[in-house]
Length: 267
Image 1: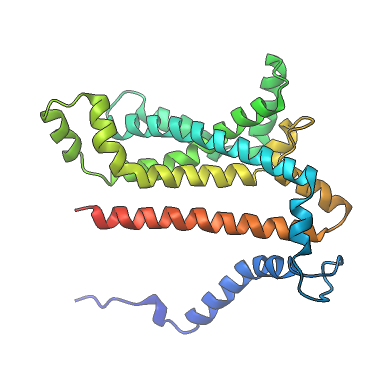
Image 2: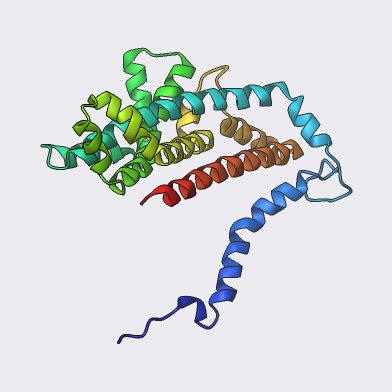
């Protein structure tokens, strides 16, 4: 009988793991800590204060950038998740369909291309179409590159779900749309939610495409951050970054809880 090896018992594995997570999360911890620094000079600690959070919440251009990013992220993630859900249903439930592999490749194409190439191509397309509205350009572009990020968890959820439930609904004379709404969608909802949250985070974090396509009045948060960093490192950046970290943790925790509940319900 072949003896199994537990990698956690390898010499030095624990030390390497601790060092890895320190290297990964120490910068984030530093940003959170310095967001409570009273001093305007970010690197010099003089005392605990919440004034930079108040300053960030009173900063009009910063709040406008946050509002723009939230609008774009919410609409783009909703569109991307809808397209990804339809694509995942077709590919997963019709694997022998002609062009299934090609369709899957087309959906995942934004993952294979460098973002700068996709951003330049999108900018040229919008210029040729005469589309000048910055918000529309951002939503369409973000929906495009967010679709594969929503597609992957939804497709994984569909592949892990038995088709017996859908077949039972059809045997009970349920129409396809009714079977999807009452049976399939509730079962794959954790994957749909995970895809939507992943798309939302990717859209909020995007800089290259947003920087190329944004117009006056549609500056997103990463673009605004970059413009401030070129001038000076303001403590307000640490404060708003901390708030975004908290928001990301809340969304990730919600997705994890839904996934764990779905796994416990699976037979």
